[in-house]
Amino acid sequence: MLVSKSIYIVAGEVSGDTHGACLMESLLNRMPGVGFHGAGGPAMRAAGGEGITDWVEDAAVMGIWEVLKHYKWFKRRFAEMLDEVVRLRPDVLILIDYPGFNLRLAHAVKEALPDTRIVYYISPQVWAWNKGRIPKMAETLDLMLCIFPFEKEIFESAGLPTVFTGHPLVDELEEKRIAVTRDEDLIGLFPGSREREVARLFPLMVETARRLHSHHPDWRFEAAAASDKLEKRMAEIIKEAKLPDESMITLKTGMSHSLMQRATCGVVASGTATLEAAALGLPYCLVYKISWPTWVMGKLLVKVDFIGLVNILAGEKVVEELIQSDAEPCQLENHLSQLMTDAGGRATLRQKLLETASKLGESGAHERAAAEVAKLLENH
Image 1 (spheres, rainbow, N blue to C red):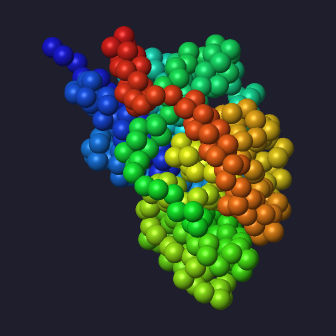
Image 2: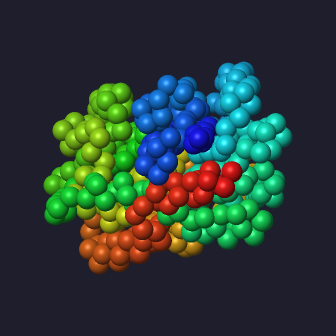
């Protein structure tokens, strides 16, 4: 009699929901009888069925203070989830990024169910903000599946079995590539996918566009909105700015990858979009702004030389980083003007970006991750 294997899987953000769903589909292709329970978003629920709770809209809060405000809610969900895991006794627990919640859950499950294998996919960036947690992770986790090549040595040196799967972004972007010529007068604006990011960064981008347009009236601007809701908010910001010509900035929803391939250069909010821009060969500068209390506390914790993933991946400054008080219209105007007018500099930067992005590995990250999980299931 064939005994079906069971997996409990947890993701707490939209990106984690996407990665989780792809991993689940790859696992189902390898092991059609595997059963899923857990928490994620609509994509994971579609892949795994009714055993997956859709919670990402409430769970995906950013910043220390925002998390503290929702502390009771998170505490209640943690207890409910732990009770469910203990009741179900899954063969494997898969945790996707979301370290504040998932690392605590891993530790609690290890104590309650020592026979359940615990896998982390999309490793938390503890190498940036708390290296002291890595030895404890090595004691708690059975396998780390990381998406950046430099992470493998960091975790393995602590005794944690680690596999570099490659970055899922490589597969995602292959489907987004289009045959297009760059518009020499177009600047791309990428203010992020979260409402708080847009509120902090898009006014900066709009004011910079005003200044650039006054000197170069032929230059045009297109802003990528991550959702219809954010497009409406961005339209309000443009209206509030009282530009001499509101039509100088075009808003489009869900077209960020197209814009990254059509624009001559751009400005990108820190995050995964900076990797996407690099892989698609868009010369850009990075902007980053958070609340000052969160920034001050973060500075005490974060121990890396750069904010941008491309610079971290390269181990050197490839793109300019305008952070906190440096993220202001005058500096951003200067950097974008330089990129627009220096064709040779743009070409050099584009080449460096493509070389750095190549370190993300080859396509097939989710399939490689599924193969490693399948090995654990087969040996359990």
